[in-house]
Length: 453
Image (cartoon, rainbow, N blue to C red; front, top):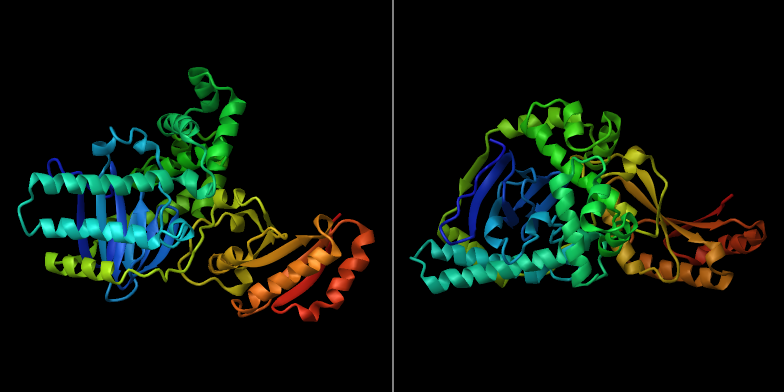
């Protein structure tokens, strides 16, 4: 069964499950936000268009209706899922249905330096839910659990919505955020409409230019990009849980024609809709292989996780069409299908399949943060190449920047990285050449000149 129901006890809007797993089939939950955490071992987890290789202590938030499956990658894999009943939180969080969570312990959470804090909160909730199974709960206990769960859910909403992922260092303020979610409500409820922005503009008395500016300001992504994502997100379920034709799915989800739908779907899911259906529909019918953990074992695992809560998680940035568009200093030099990688493909990527990702840098670039993202690029099949635009700098500043790169990369990179010095004025050629002649003083760097015309 694709849609699995999560049973909640009366007046208790959270619950959990924990099991040793070999494989859990592709499925989803309606009206439930799930937090999946690896208790021991490791697993390959698919969530909609993304795939994650997770180890002990890693956790992710899974949106309602997100397809997800788990494959253990060793014999020790144990996982726990914390479930939130969304309908119980609609009064305190009225726009909860329109939040798309982007919360992984190794991505934005790591970026915010909150990996340990959230892990402790998740583990504490799971610990108390497990202990509750060993005794009769009282009213005070139930209220404390509800309060702790709501506190965690508010953190997810305020800090780890999709808009926070693509606009990491910006707080638009309460009033603009409220307007943003009002428009998100229209998108989520009327995504199939062909002229949706016109409809919103007429009903809310916002100009289309205001809507466009609001989305860019609050979430860094454009209205059209978010709408396209929601349409694709909705179409995935129809592909997996119905036999409706691809043409009809495209029409139901608001796409103007099948070609436009197919090209956008492939950008996110790396396969055409028909290929995706052929591969993943059979995954739904697979028999899951798992064994539920004893309550005593869950309690031991949670207490150990809280006690040994360390922050040694490596940072892994996601690469998808929106993350690429919102990296303002990235310049892509790769075929469209390579730029649009949305998840880590299963299996290794051969060197001949690697594509170049060109990243513009200047004296304001945080090189330490940038180099921490290189492993994620390389795992996705991209070879990082840096570009310095000579017209934006000078011979002296360019030399200083290269020395800074050299010092930063020398201790963290095992191989040289290519840096392109790009120029468009032939009068700059002698200065660029002088940098190349002194390239031996730049460790871990291969310099390459490029005339831009």
